[in-house]
Length: 511
Image (cartoon, rainbow, N blue to C red; front, side):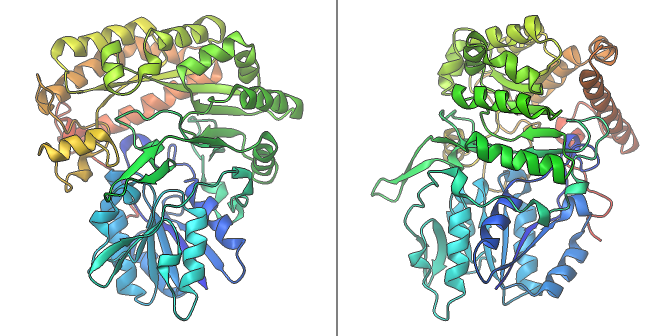
């Protein structure tokens, strides 16, 4: 059986172009590694973005490979239309091939994408490695019975069928090593400035211990329980690979593929202090010179600093963190199910880096446009951003991502439809608040960014004595200037957020 896993061509968010910081999608080598470990499966991976494979070239390549099964996943609602275009193309050019979709977006909207005329034959719900392997094994039989495979949604006769819930892999060390050798590793992390040249993604954990109401990242890796009424209860769960397994992967990336910069894509990298400490000790013993970025929880930062672990993490290569501060008001944090950040713990964590580890580049994100947002609360977010004075504060309008309570509420109340996903870029406001329209939120958002990201901010970064920080500021300046120039060329009003931050079509997109 020949299986082809594809990330199709996509228009990209202006701040994530493949020329600047396009990095490896972890699902591709992870799924390929699991499939390759199964006897009788010939695996191919096509990652169109770094290879600059456009739609016409992709169709020709699929036709040449003549696959039995084609898989494509998507976590972002923003790119759902391109994934659907891909499945339609597969059915046109390789009609005998079975198609399977995965990832958070299709997991949370299986009911929307499975039907009698769908181009998707099955959707893998949740964690995909075991489900995908079992599905291919079943499709390889002369009389396949998909009901035997847990974690699927598919169409049968006149109805959609959901099989039993797929149990999460209890020990992540049991999952085969990612098939990095099937990826164009030399094409990832080519930026001269961002995330250290020659960077790659990696992860040691899956899931989260929390369930923030605006976040769909945790839901794909959640425990699932059937409520008996057609609905599913999700419970957050966090798992980690062992330090030994993680370093088996790092040493492969470091020595075979020359990767020195690591972008950890874990939802929350620093949950377990025992892992954090053992990781830092191991990295320091190896003598490998690396720089790495991680999403970190503020409360865990404070804990690790008290335990003497954070200092070792910084010495082991921690160069860049992102903390989701989200809001200035504790009551709003509680409403967003982010109660563990109340009481000023984010400010405490950020102060630790400013005082003790000033060489680490610190990003902080804020969510604006929540239900109770007003001009005054927007100013509260600005005041807090000025107070924490991090290297890069980012304001993102709350976006009702499928799989979240915010999505369910917005859909039920008619604030959005299931056809609005092309605007779900976390830059364009898509919801009104009780006191502001989405256009007013967009205008205020523009003013907030202009207030903080200015010439003084840029000059401070460009004159930093820390090379990593200087590189980051150079990158931000380059990309922002390119966006501004493009806006002038296209005569785009920079105050019109919907159009100014539109997705960018690569020159090779249709080739």
